[in-house]
Length: 228
Length: 232
Image 1 (cartoon, helix red, strand yellow):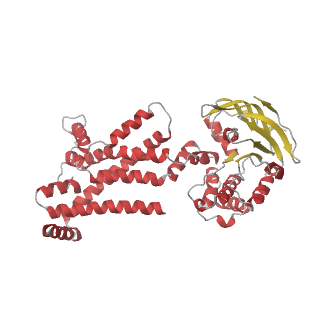
Image 2: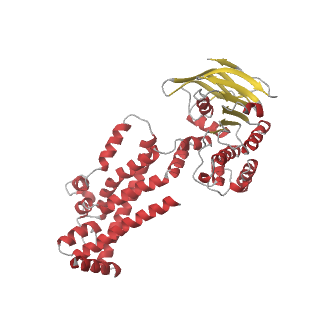
Image 3: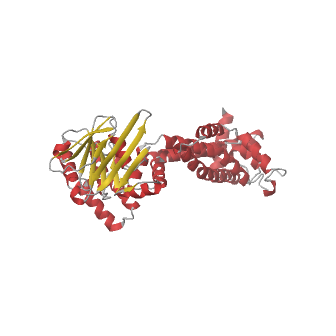
């Protein structure tokens, strides 16, 4: 028990003293995850809206595929993109492997289906009167869809938050595509795995506390938004 | 007098079994019309088609004598036809912002926008509601806001689906006196209702609907009967 308490004390000291290594790792995590979720939102919200509202051939198949993609193991995404970005791969000449860009690409692939799927649920479950009301007040169809998204904004924000939760906490993509390079591609999750295996439990715990705090902060933000 | 809205050989299926079928129907300008009939007779479906929210499966709807065809034309003409649904949806915003929605789409902004909104709110006794959240209103208040939101746009055709359903006893006279003024301002009002008393309080042409077919026509009060109609 003493070990745990001592480690926790030490980890808090690392956080409060803004230890350079901790700060750099947290920054890499936040930077890659935030960029990835923004890209995933740009892809996921429109495609989720299209699938939620559209009635076209192949829609059911697309929804099934989307559900499957939601459960993609992170290491599989990492593995496939590793094949693309590796020196012999089709995108090898871009030199992306073991860079934050590669991590962002992988995390975008992970988060986009989640954002799209939650958007489908939000849009398809929205009050059917929203579109007709906007249309009868003179809106074009695209303006009516925009109004629908505004009315379902909590569902859309929840979709983005769920995607963010997935990418900030994942290890597989960051490890395989980022390579866990200190000060460059080392994220909170990869650092926790590495430092703990090296016996630096306090360091891992410090990052774990920050990771939990980020999750808490994001959820508090979501709650606050829903109460407004 | 010229018809503002007409229906020709209309057929529209809903839910597989129900079919709305109207061969010929003309709505003259600046009149009040009632669509009466039991629940499920097709009143709301007909209103939705007249509001140009969806094209009919077969047949035509004519606006000012011109057949409505294509998405772009429907969208353009919807600026002159406004539907207030039975349980109207108010956007998650203030009452004022709800009224401003359609005006902004028509590029009515600034002082003119404010003036028109204030006038519409005043007409329905809603002046003090302007800054209230629309979602916090009662059913009757929401109904009045929805009517104000439609009136502020000054449509040529106003379609109302069971407009007095959610209204309390005190609000009905105000609501109906507001409607009574509309034909004089160039608005054609088409009301779907099962309130048998309403046509007596506010005179107009009465059209009966039964299982998707027009059944009867007649006038209440001083309005002139001048409607061409053939049953399917």
